[in-house]
Length: 509
Image (cartoon, rainbow, N blue to C red; front, side, top):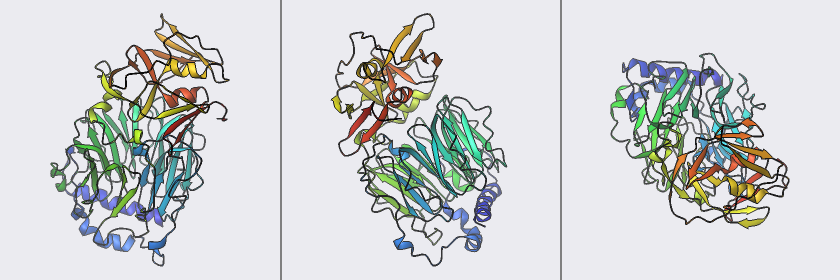
């Protein structure tokens, strides 16, 4: 019954977009909630009102304060997720809390551990673990939760009854409903981010273009003309894209989309079935409708959109939420997030502080131009010993000098050698072999911003070419910390209280 209800909601939204008659891709999504007033009767007939539930006192699953001994490194844009009747919050200890109610059990996530990214679906939820595997909760009616065999995943997204996973090699996998071809990723390559709507999937490519597959009602899949996109979001009736200049694009075709001027200077976007929201550089939030009140929101570093509610993560780690006015919101307690404390790591607050141009590090046409990167501020414990590294924050991730990492692991059972093959222009990493000291290791930086270029060298791990992303800074190769540690089975954790990165070769992986 619930699946039929949700499908009806999606169909109503899609039909409204077609009836408006607009057939071109427009910028700065401005689809006013008023466009859906005529469908109020349908929502009244089909909507789940959860009669009999005490929605003001629904339990919050998990420890809202995140007071555990687990440590997992995460980014702010992965710490909150929302859908129709529930909200998820990812703590920096790798555990997940929830508010609201999902009849399918999608909110049952309190036993998840070592999570680095969360995705909330209509009937199911997905968690990406630090080892690249995936867990799921909720309905498995179409096989959308059959993700236990997935490996080497770097990002996840959820649609109506399907799940998509971005692999580290830039390809995409899927599980669940494929009625409209929303899992047809056979031609997708060089993907850097994914999003999912009700019956369509979206991929952001490394060249800043966007691909989409699935049900195309009206102009929903029409992203072919988009360029220089750095972020994507999707709902059942829309795809949104944010370009390097902070301009927002939408495929939602209706008369309200002409209100484009309000979405400017945006650093993050969130698409929902009945509205859209943008996070501005100054930490405030804008929406395309007066039916979502965010006038008091400040110091926001991430946003996520549910079907009828909007959630914001603040710089201090607290969470705020609001729902649609005029009685059109599902009242299931999904906005009861006032007690959450997600302990945002200071060096992870990059959404507002960074500029969209810096995201161009994924753009192959710009990799020789260089970008400006800032020193990473977090301390590091290597086998319980505090160690000073020269490291930089790029795209919210910590990049360390390759030879420094080899140096500090030398003599442990996780040691590895670093060699250079001049003929192949390749870096070779060999596990279990002693590291040959070059003499330039562990030199401190000057704590100043630096220019970084994408490294063109190939990377081989034990003879197998591996698609690591690396940057050259002052003639040295810097790699994403988690990539190197995972390659040699070294535990990486995050102590949110002490603001310390933990590397430990004794913890089993």
